Image (cartoon, rainbow, N blue to C red; front, side):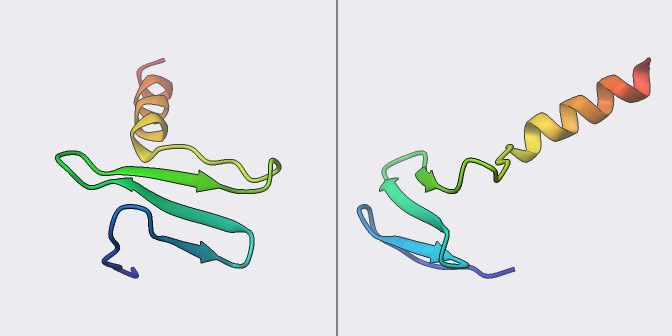
Length: 57
């Protein structure tokens, strides 16, 4: 795991294709993600919910 400290307005790029931008640091952190359309970006919380629903069926 890579942990970075950034200020609001700063950004970093992953693999030359995915740009992560810090939008706000007061209270909750807001991130902006720019990535190719073919790259699926899903919050872990949604994946966990889907896995729970599949196990319940």
